[in-house]
Image: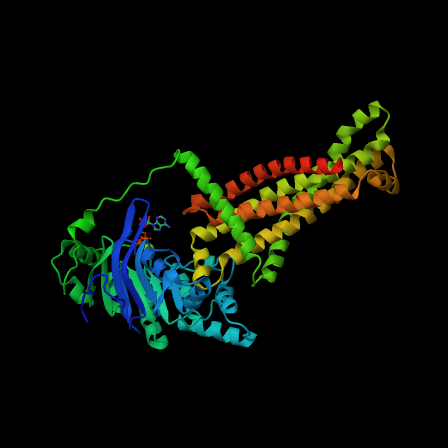
Length: 263
Length: 275
Ligand SMILES: Nc1ncnc2c1ncn2[C@@H]1O[C@H](COP(=O)(O)OP(=O)(O)OP(=O)(O)O)[C@@H](O)[C@H]1O
Ligand SMILES: [Mg+2]
């Protein structure tokens, strides 16, 4: 395991997601400066980094919501930024994206939030099948009873779960979680961590989990990548990554385990 | 386990600074114009292809109509009454109060109803669309649609713009009707004119071109309100402040453009009339 990818090498043909030499700037702000990262089949990769280090930008580039300045991203062996609209949509149907702030459609109730992407992406489902898929997805996140609630009536943790259920309903092969535990209490965070692991087990998904919560990283990550100064500074198992004298990584570790933060 | 260190050259390579072409203000205006133009172009391209989201269009039509109906009823009615009252003394000076119905009908259909309807819809519907799409933008709901392989431009922008384009002319006709009702009540009360006589006098001097051009004008106004409000909402910048700004800018810009269009269209119609 614990190996550094050689910087900007060839795309790994076996990886589900392969990122090479990715750079992205906004105006004069260089956010990503050459990120290399691979995600293998059925693997959970955690990306750790401070606020503003470009974690969200990274996974938005993976699904083509943002376009990189340089470098290459392949998902299922396809170069994302070269895909035509139709093929991009095809790729996106196989990728679930859980947003940092859940991004539930707030004019729709929970049931409609799940039904909307399902109806738009699958033709000819009967009413019964739709109900079954919605019930299955809600049961998977442990919220079968909240069909008729509006997003505004849900707690932060519930919103996160519904957001995950909304992506599970399309049966994705890849899950991208943006800060799944940010702003949640330790117990709810623990439940979300378990949920992420369950999803990986039951649906055999490969995942990128973005976080700055080390408890989450330790529980969900098969591998952990440390994003610093716009690059993957270290990658490997949780313990390997933090077995270092680099003060920047040490302080990240100490800060997390001496004080709980949730910006 | 090794730590990757950036080479010194890579880390310290200076980035070229961006400078403006003319002045920052002029640049921003030019960029805004070209953004707007490509948004407009995208509307025409995307509205041609399936899916058409017919149910969503109908829902939005209902929303537009339902939201503005009470206000249009009130404003149309009051406009009818007040305009009649104010015009009476001038006509009475020539002993021509019998011309009131004709004058009111011409004023309402040619000019007042389209403008009143468009301005009310710009305020009511425009701010609503701007705020709704703006908040969807800043809470990443638009991106959420996109990653679910749903085209948010089609689902949000095209449906709403079609809805306002269809509903503003409809509301304009309704506004003329209510305005004439208000005027009739006033004329009936003062001069005792019967409804049949009022209508006969009213429509005596109205041509098909008058109604036609008002409907066309309203289509243009409706489209303007829809596309501008969607543009402002769709391009809202982050934060709750951005939502307020988007709603506000939708109204201000819609009204501004509506007045410019009114002026141009009146010129064109007069030119057709004299031709
Ligand atoms: N669309 C955008 N336009 C301009 N700047 C942006 C955009 N998206 C992100 N940025 C900037 O890029 C930087 C990284 O943002 P990003 O959201 O990826 O951070 P993050 O690592 O996810 O932080 P957090 O933990 O707070 O979510 C920030 O400084 C942000 O201001
Ligand atoms: Mg983020």
